[in-house]
Length: 339
Image 1 (cartoon, one colour):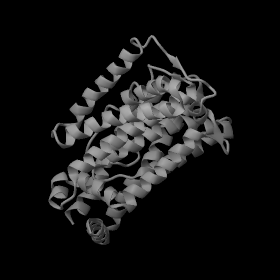
Image 2 (image 1 turned 90 degrees about the horizontal axis):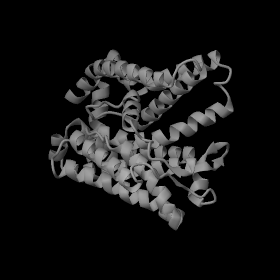
Image 3 (image 1 turned 90 degrees about the vertical axis):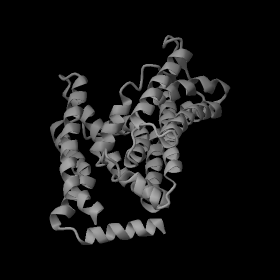
Image 4 (image 1 turned 45 degrees about the vertical axis):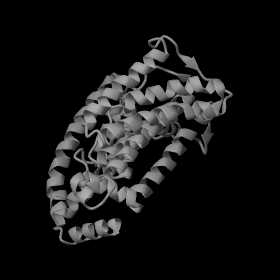
């Protein structure tokens, strides 16, 4: 019933929109896809080595790890929260996979999922039941997870290698139809994410919580339980991504994941999800991830620019997107929520 009422409310709001408001909403939701298409088109015409199969495979593989982390971040941000711990959890997941694989590939996958999922569960419990600010909670677990990582690796001095004949390593390095298994895993997860957000009561409740947690609570939605579930899922996905990245490189590297949470947040926001919560799409996040990776690839194609310029471009692009979103949200979502 709740999902039906939400759909009906949105339909009524859409029916009363002006053409300008409808266009503003469409640009907010699909603008990243258009920009991605334009960047790909210009890059293909400008660089001979950009529009090649090998380069597409490389972009897809590099995007898959960030995409899995950004998927969990999408749901958290839509609910009105934030998860700053995913970069450290991602790195911790890779090291735990390299440690656990000595007892077999199943242990190599389960160990990071259990520990990283536990960190996400802790985040969700403190936010939902402890009523603590998500920024503070996840900042604390960011530092805690990084500290645990350094503790189990002798302050980063020990890099554990993964056997190349192990099943988990082969999953990280194997290919299907020319693309790596991590790419296909990311595709499947995003397909599930689209279904959950758009076709299930749980997904509709996430949107409602992001719009107004108090109103969602008065509607009888399980706000606290959903919040715990969202942060747990974010931790699980970050741990899974770290394990796959470790399998891809056949080693648990301690220096990865620094600033990864900022890349994930940037991809989500560029994809059209509002930092204030209540609106966003899984497909938009995927477009945001690809756009960031394509920009990085283009900078590498230029050759004369340092890779640090990617951060400069991403930061400037993110600032522009946030400013545009603020305008579009006033033109579109303000009308929708007041209807």
